[in-house]
Length: 245
Image (spheres, rainbow, N blue to C red):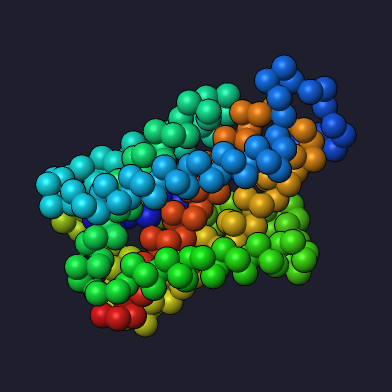
């Protein structure tokens, strides 16, 4: 089942970061270089494991995908509540999610030839556009915007969790899989929400660097960005699949 994996909690986002630099921790602080290296590492691990999930898709039981989704959710949730564990949870999360998105991508590619390339390009373009909007301050991340995006994300996450639970009883939730106008509109809205979550990730990284947060927050920030990009990619995959259907 091609289930998305949104950021279900952003506890760190809700904390007020200090406005003045704090005393540098013994383990180092967040820097643009450390964030770049950590993010690149996690994306590289995810991509490599996605190739594995794609290649060995036929040998992996479908039930393992759901298990992988739940494990990934548990890891990101644990990292959100226990940020100091993020350096130890980030790589396992990237491995699990890489295998899952590789397998899901293979499923969609089998049904709709060329869809994976389309979704990847759409994800890259969306990422670049949102980054440009953030850097130029065309869209400013205010406390109100942050609250709205987090609230909407939590609502979508709850909707997906309920749909997973009902799927065990062979009950399909409307909109998630429908390829009609309402189903497509729902997917467009969720893709837009995922895109706005990128702004929150950029803001978190910028504020963390400015506040000289401890280095373990670097891993949490990179995980958050990875989660959002994976969510965006899977939602675009679903949206394109609905349109093509």
